[in-house]
Length: 91
Image (tube, rainbow, N blue to C red):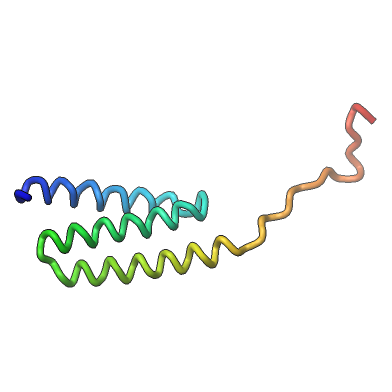
């Protein structure tokens, strides 16, 4: 692979990772997608020869997977029920 291809892959991988990080609060699946982005960034680090980056991104991916597993087991928030003093027109 030439350096331009590796650089383009790195830009795409890191951009994907950052977008997924920004969206994490919307749904636990974005946390898992962030972990995938970390792995892709780690592949970029490997291809470019930046070993500390590889290790850091793999650790970040493991932390994100752990967070996903914890978030996925949380119970769903309760749905709001109508107040007893509010009567719908159908009743």
